[in-house]
Length: 429
Image (cartoon, rainbow, N blue to C red; front, side):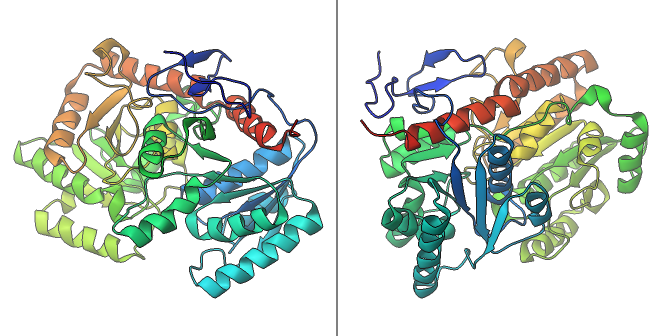
């Protein structure tokens, strides 16, 4: 089947530019038309709107985008409520504007929209790019009144408990282009919000394979992080990623740990390495669950490790047990780059990212998948990972790293992102 041509870009809808610049067709479409031009015809100024630049996919994605634009010779302005990632932007020469972009108050949203509109006009911004729903409402209004293209980047599937929440979420589908990290999330956006495929660009997060390189990791660094967890030499570490949020599914991992104990498995330790530091209500509930299930001896709440690369290197397996659609979590991509076996729920990462039977034969798999909330399936997958020969486990990790290097190389992600910017800023005939 040949997809229709997108008149705004001149290339076939439902095609994705891959890392080797080949174009291929899939059904359903694997991403959107990126654009006929690979780079913008001139230097651009982009206003990036994001609630905070503290932690999480949207925050880190906004920072990565700003740094990428500046590195490519463009200008970036980030409007947000601020956060601990600000120094990285300041060091790169990114302009920062402090606004309460996380507010949902209608009057505050209107004030933000007016300030962003004035900023767009004064700084002659060419694009307004929103990361996050609250920021997107103000950014959309500013872009429309200033008559500049509006883009969104959508990192996860939002809950839609009622019609009002659906409308609130829908702002993320109103971009001239909607960027999302995986085919699975793209399909969700199309299904829920009827966004045409030609307006969607599937672009994963950029992962520096040079930084996340298992061959460059020293034994000393691995031993240091294992000592910080109190891990014995013969203990297999199962690293559970993600911030301490219920939708990340840490409670599913607790139930899996209980199952492993029940079958008599020994010498294993779950390390929960998400950001929280015990501040959230969920982390308290999680520890209550650990105590109630008698798994305190095989679970560590280690929070965010200081040496993330070594943490992956010290792990026998890396888990994301998300119970809501996540797209393509950066920690899973980083773990794959480190050639670690990954086990993900079907909502944590798409089948296009973590390849597993029955979608692919076992000699092509890059990890394991399990149904969301299914602790028995997660436990069974972990038993298989820990019991399989080292050579087989290394082969899976090697294929995972190759996938990341092919799809998530910074140069590839930059090229695809700039192609989107070129498409929306190209002069109309």
